[in-house]
Structure formats: structure tokens, C-alpha cells
Length: 599
Image (spheres, rainbow, N blue to C red):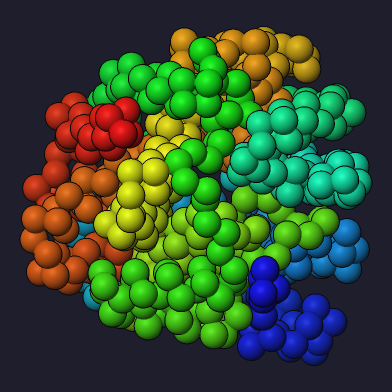
């Protein structure tokens, strides 16, 4: 690297965790909650379904305004704290501030539940009230969804208890998993030198190093490292899933999947259609795996081969080169996107350096108060790393479209299914640009390889994670799962999706241990597949319509929190409940597999 990957800067939000500005924000959060609680208590005691629609509309509008103001402040403050925790899990000050502020967040959740219960009782007259008030009308989707979901609430006392217990229940288990996995380090010999590597760096090495011997040692070292912490991580998994199962039962949910589908703003027909299409595509992906194995001189791929680079020697990007290429590519697609990304680079919105104690992978978070985003990634110069940056900047641009359209905090509450729309688009245009400028078949092969690696992860591996989580939730209803139970379930799920495309002797039984998605929320998997295939479908429309597509596209991004996925897709004449749409999107990926096998 000629330039060290940057750390992000949030000094324009608050000067520090110990600053008077930060402490003022914490105090203001509590003061706003006090005022909101008083307002809500009076509202619930005096207003009901018999209240005149116009009066009800005014009061609902005021409640929405207060909520947006509160979310702006609290969303900014918690994101600021998490920016320190995500980049250094040994920062004891940040950890303490997080624990303290989580108490404030719990109180907000409790009040939010009370508001939801009250809105649920207004369901018979809610539409009439919405039509009388502009603020309510602008937040109609949120209000109607709030009323529908109110049927799955326990009593106020039970919901309050559940929220308070979450700090020492699911939330505590999730934090423990993050702390354990971010602090694991290993001694690894590379180029004649023994280095102490955080797990993110070791996994990166396993996935990108051109030497199979190094990749295999990294894989074996990783599994051994998880062996040492497997029991506490299994306890974390059992704690999170057990806590969730109990709440789902008492809230009257059909199953663990029920709430995830509702949160995604889709229905079971949509999910079943997508999963069916994904399963039908497995033979094509297995053909890709077998072709890759032959190119590596093997009969079957081992786990450490899944990400192995192929084709001409994969270019290593400096940070400066990665920045330049992304900006150039974005500019050809949409100048506004390039201008936005340049602002993100120039103003240090991105934290890219790998270091001990930092979260692995990548994510993007919106900072509501300053109407900006921050991106975390772990950059070592590979093409995959460049694609991750493009992907996360897509998330940031998604938020930017909403900010520019003047959307409120509630209007920006985008489900995971639609949250991947811009990120997949940005990743796709960068990959397509690379393919367009490939100089020879070997270079084209290398680029196709990196794209198909990602597609296989989101279609094949995501399906395995879905199967695994579904089984864990079901079995957790009867008893805790041992480490061996979890490893066995993980390997069976991988065999079901990878099939004979992967050597069954070298799977990854500990994928459940380090993937934070399992501990953050329920079924943090199928929305990725939705995002890839929905984004692929939109990209196909862009290819047909050209620049005329972009205005509709940015309007879609600005409104992903204001309608169901089906209604938003209908704007582009897409029927997401039909098997055909998902099959057509997957057909675009299969074309790449066909080309890959031809080369």
C-alpha cells in the first residue's frame, strides 16, 4: 500500500465521548423521553377510537413529530458510540457509554411499544384520521403497519419487562459474541515471518491468498481458533435464539420467521417464490464450483478454495487506486453518485484499516443529525475489497437520496430486503465496468470469478444460513443445542445447498460462531438474496432504459421506507410474488456462469 487505509472521522457529530456536547446529547435524550412519556400518557388516557377524526389526526401528527425528533437525536448518539465500539472492542470508555445509553434506548422502546398498542386500538378509525392531517398522511404507511403489528404485542407490563430484560438477555449475548470474536488473534507464519493476526485478517488471507497451501493453513488455523472459544459462542447462540422463541410464543407469532417476514415488508408468498427460484439455480452454481475445481487441478473444491482467485494475477489496489476507480465508474453511471462518493472519501467517512479489536466485514450507518453516513470495511487491496467499498457506499447513497428528498426518520426506516437495493447496484456497476475493460480471457476470468464468488455467497451460502437458522429456532424450542449440534446443523445445511460442488470433508462447521448476523436479529440472511436479485432485476431495466431510469431509481431509494416491497417493485412493473421474476434475475447470473465455464 502506498497510502494507509483511512480511519473515519465523526468529530463533526460530537468532539469526543467525554465532551460536553456528547453529555448534553445524552441529557437531552432523557429530557425528550420525559416529555414524550408525559405526552403519551395523557394521549392514551384521553383519546380513543371515538375521538373525532380531525382531532385524532392532529394528535397523531404531533406524536409523529415528537418521535422523529427523538429518533434523530438518539439515532445519532447511539451511532456515534458504536463507531468507537465497532473499531475497538477494547475501548472500555465506549463500552461503558454504550451500556449506559442502552438503558435510554430501552426506555424509548418501551414508550414505542405503548404508542403501538394505542395505535392498534385506533385501527377502525385510523385511515379516516390519517386523511385529516398532512403529517399523518405523509407517514400513512408507518402508521398502518404499526396498527397491524400491534396485534402481536403482549400486555404493556410484559413488553416493558421484555425490553428491560433484553439488556441482560439477547442483547448481552449478542455483545458477548461480538467481543469474543473481535478479540481472538492467532499467530500465523507468512513469508517466513510469524505475525499476530486478528480473525478478520486471517479470514481475508484464507479467502484471497493465491497460494493454496497458505489458504489451507489459514482455514485450519481459523477452525482451531474457534475450537478454543466454541462453548461461550454456543451459549450466545442458545441465549439469543431462546430469548427470541419465548417472546415469539407470548406475542402470538406463527414461528420465528413470522416477524422477520413482516419486518422485511414482504409476505410468505414472496419469500417462497424467491427461495424456490434460488433452489432451482443450485445445479448451475454447482457447475460453476466444479469448473473452478478443475481449473485448480482438483476434483472438488474445499472450503478454502471458494474464494480463491483465478485467471490472471489479481491486481492489488492501493487505497488511492481503489478510490480513483470507484469514482470513475460511479461517474459513468450517475455523476451525482460520483460527487457523493467523492465527498465520502474526502471527508473521512470510511474506516478501512484492519486492526485488532475492529469488527470484521463491512457495514454502513446513517448519522441522522448531520445527514451523513459512515462506512466500515477491512481493506487489503483485493478486488473483493474494492467491491465491498462500492457496496457500502451504495448504502450511504441510499440514505443520501432520502436526506435530499427531506424524508423523516420514520420515513427512512427501510427493511433489510430493500436496504440492499443501492448497494447491489453500485457493486454491479463496478463489476460490469471491470468486465468491459478486461484485456484478455484470463483477466475476464479473474473478474467473473470475483463476481460469481459474491453471487454464490448470496444465493447458495445464504440459503444454507437460512436452513441452519430455521433448524436452530425449531430445535431450541425443545432444548439447548450443544456445540456439536450447531456444527452438525451447519454442515448439513452446507451439504444441502453446495451439494456435490464442494468437498464434504472440508466444509465450515463454525460459520455459526463468527457470523454476527445470527446474533443481531432473526433471519438476517434471505434479505441479502432479495437485495441481490431485486437489484439485478433493476440493473436489467437500467440497461434497457439508460439514463431515463435514474430519476425513477433515486425516487425509489428515497421512498423504500414508505411502501411494501411489492408496491415499490410494481413501479417498475415487477411482480415479486411470481416465480418468473426471480428466475429471470437468476438467469442473468447464470449467463455469467455459462461464460465462466466457456473461458
